Amino acid sequence: MKPFLILQLRPETDASDDEYASILNKCQIDADQTLRIRVDREIIPSELDVTDFSGVIVGGGPGCISDAREQKSDLDARIEEQILAVMPQITDLDHPFMGCCYGLGVLAHHLGGEVSKAKYAEPVGPSICSFMPDAGNDALLKGLPRKFDVFVGHKEAVQTLPAGAVHLLSSAPCPFQMIRYGQNVYATQFHPEADARDFERRIRVYRNHGYFPPEDAERLIDVCHAAKVTVPGEILRRFAARYRSFAFS
Image 1 (cartoon, rainbow, N blue to C red):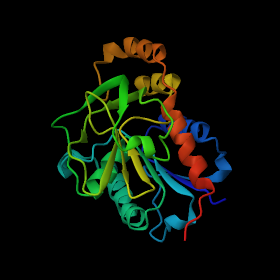
Image 2 (cartoon, one colour):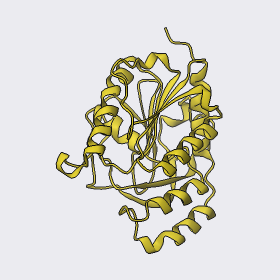
Image 3 (cartoon, rainbow, N blue to C red):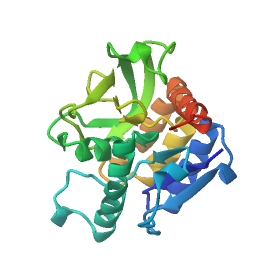
Image 4 (cartoon, rainbow, N blue to C red):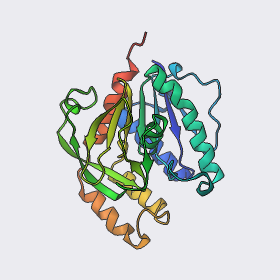
């Protein structure tokens, strides 16, 4: 089995480590089955070949791809530039990819879709996703409940479906919750790796980052623990199971 490439964008070490552990847990893979690159502190090698990996998973992060360059820190701009540089390989080869939250913005932006803060931002906490017409036959979604809870929290969102993409999941506040490009390139607005404990830790880390009033942190933590969010983790497990043994010509 080739390893999975895990690209992480969070500059906060506790949040990054927690996210990595959650990805391993939901994918049911061990650390030695991955190559982890923290893009906030490492450079993605220019000679990187995505076909050396079973698949690529991009985690979330506090940056916004729709911000103007002058609004981005040098770190956020460097992270964005590196991730976008990998995307042509992904989409040209239809190589297995799962973009989580920020990863949806990256994929949509790369494909020419509109990503902005105009509409569809969602507060931190649980939300309900629903199947779109093409979801029932998708390899990662087939047989799952047609409606299920997810964890979200984002300032920007995809405004229009990119050309060539398939719309898989939607929610009332944010229509583009999961898309697929080709047969193997996926991205979600929600966090498929996260459970309530993950979101509790992230709420504490990002309580002063503008996602919610800081005084709401404990209430949001209680709301997350009261929710039953299980299906997103199954989607990530299916992604890893499908592509760890998938044969490509």
